Image (cartoon, rainbow over all chains, first blue to last red; front, side, top):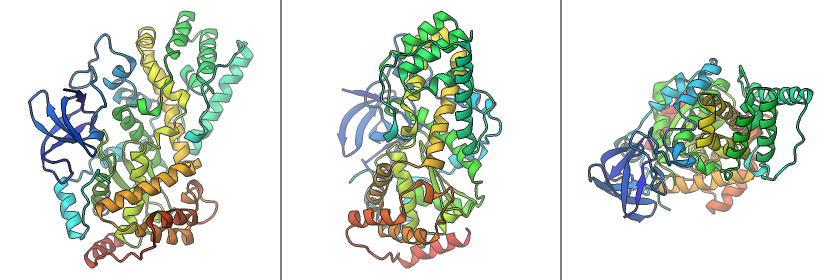
Length: 141
Length: 339
């Protein structure tokens, strides 16, 4: 069975291949999952660490298995450049900090505030229902 | 430089530079980079040797000139110069090789620079509504999950503009909000920006040579030889990449094909969620009357509203007047009063 990794900070594992599907658990960056089946931009996966099964959107997953440990900071000795990049190297927090020390006039405070604007699935459902917007399911044509 | 204008990778024969030429080359690169950064509203304190490397036109030229400059100027040893040349012989990389995490860090800095152009509009309720709408739409895009997710912010300017940083930070000015008469129209604007993120248009503005440079600097050999200065080199490439993106977003604009792509993808997103794509046409009609020539806004960076209307009419079929249900229009009117 093919193994891939989660590439986003917090990937949602859902009961159905849709954003209407209830979230079973959040799966963190770098976590390895086994591909069970794929359909319309969604993949049914099994989280290797705890055996949880559910659907994740393809945009949260890598195309192939990557040799990195959970947490994303530990690359194996035989890692290629790509794998090193995936393992938290490349343009990362450290590079941002270096950039900020070189350019103290660039203010990140509102970028951080923006990232705190998070809307839950439930809020989306209520917002669309109240506005009489009929959702088409998300991620599909 | 946008993606349609990227230089091809081809070998160049470069004569070693003498000291005077080296100094001249350095000054030229420094001036050009700073000029672009100044235009984008940012000044840089320093530009080390890696910035010179990343400013060159082709990978081979970059390696040879960079290694020569580095070795000749004593900034790097000859063995490091050899190593650098070896590192860059690695297959050239494309924007697709950036991981979502790297794209996220690029996007955060691009966002911070966009916020230097227009200050944030600090109204929690208005920004909350914008995020409810925007994050409802982004879930229906082809790329609903990015490393850090989609987040939206109003900017306090009368200029007509909206900007999307890679990874999902999306900005819209009060000026552009005032071109929207309905939630469907605003949904159209946001869906267009989400489409730019979905299609990774932002990171495609980074010069190809720089992408290869960024992704090979972290290769094993480079890491072995450069040690802690690897970070300095990477940060310089990072700075140059940010300049490529902000220069494109704020000044030159994307290619017409990217804009067309964003409009057509916006229509798909709107239809999936249940908004009327005619709202985008309605907004463009108002924008057509509101844009003032000579401003550094949508008028400078986008195809004319007339051209976009023609394209969208073709895609949508017939033009439909936007009449949102009363409850939807009421909440939009409440939002508009806060702007």
